Image (cartoon, rainbow over all chains, first blue to last red; front, side, top):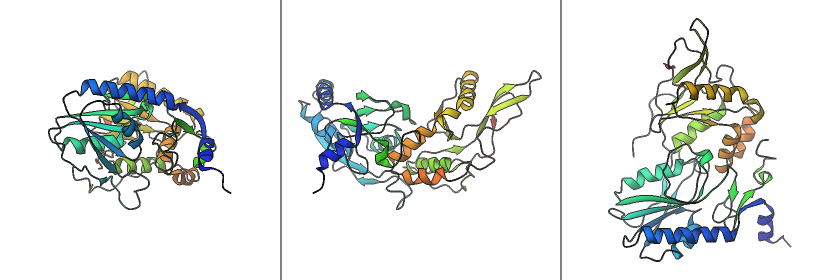
Length: 192
Length: 149
């Protein structure tokens, strides 16, 4: 009999960075803030697959106003480099955003390269406004200057998983954000 | 979106990690130039440039220089000193130093641990430490001026 999958994924986490309670409390605060800021503006929240869907699901349930959601998926470096040399939209918007108040919902912003590309793409669609709401901000790794309007937590430069964030498509279902053991991704330590 | 294909040939990178970072930038459609500028940082009493610093990349759309060092953390003191001097002498210059640990984290994020393992067995090319010498008292241009997108 195999080891229970959840036990395995918990064991791969060396430290819980943000507990489930901390995340839920902060996401609720963000929901209240967005509710106040977007009252009467009927915003559309755009989530970028796959990492941000858990955050989006909790965030919108804390927003007490009329809103809509849309989903995009963008290829990432590494997995896509064999087939294409450039970032691509894998799943485009389902509805036009021209004249709409858009909130881009991101799980984590580190280098900002994906978001930089995405924002250029979305600006061409001529929304009325475009703001960013991210759960995790990792500024130490930033290459592009991106003003982030709503930040859940600023975190140190460590490799984190959980609450939607993955490594090799796993760990997204952890209810907390944790630091993955380097041995899981084949390194003895971050410095080795 | 702009046309991204460059008609210029890629530069000869000093290290495999630089070539990989260029591929990442290309992928995300961020224009870059390789070692386009050399910044003198120390001078002799007669005014001759003694030391200079040539950051690996310049990202023109972001107005940002990026220096990538693959030295182990314990060996980066010399590079940190150069960077500190550059920031003192050219405060208007925006530069980001990516340490080996940053690059490794980037590769882990992109599922490129195999590249890290490959890289650990490769050699640094002898002529590319990213720290050239200049002959003037101001910022001078290097040889690789092509913008790659």
